[in-house]
Image 1: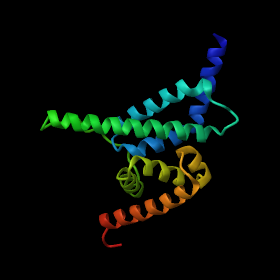
Image 2 (image 1 turned 45 degrees about the vertical axis):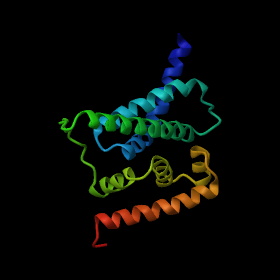
Image 3 (image 1 turned 120 degrees about the horizontal axis):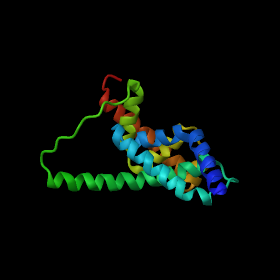
Length: 170
């Protein structure tokens, strides 16, 4: 019983230390608070299931990024599929609109632009914006280092072009 309690306390401490990372990833995949919260819960569940196998010799952030991004990509795909099926069955659906947290307008625009990227591109740009080195991104995502550099440049170009589309004055 005590070892279970120690495990739980260690996990909670790890979550507390890295909760902003999880929220940032979820915010890049979903705009609505309810969707983000569902994804955050799913990420935490997968982290908890994997926690007994966590190797403390590896950095916690890399371990969390890998799980959070994989869960987010899978969850996003499942959610998109579910929404497509739902819209096929319901032509006119009214959903409750939840008040969103007040987010700085530029940050909101950035999240909007990131949400337009593919799931893999989202993961790469989130890690890049978090300040991860390309080698770490390569390790987390599972692609070559040169592929990471190429993808980052292409994603930046895509984000700039999409931003110019939204704000043609610039």
